Image (cartoon, rainbow, N blue to C red; front, top):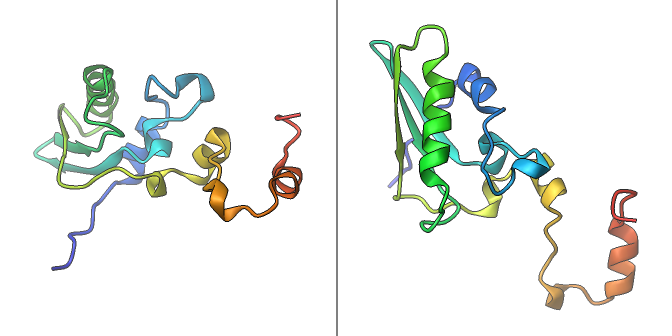
Length: 129
């Protein structure tokens, strides 16, 4: 069974690029960079937004939903927004933007790094020094 492609128009991506997951606000990682935005469609000036959460236990879900709704509803051609969390797809780190990956500095599984010191030397950035 093929997955239905999810549509996110550029105007929605732009509108949500300044809406932050509260856990990542201090790092400047938006809901777009986190890969939380799954789809945005507009019918009769009402936007329908689908979001994924990094965890079903996110204590900030209501806050994120409200901020996304306000940002989308403020766009030209949109009178209101319906924002829903979808549960039929799990969020994974594959959804992170390259910038978010860099900012979060995910490390590989230690068992896949034969020489820890060489790995760290090759991946050290000026920020980390």
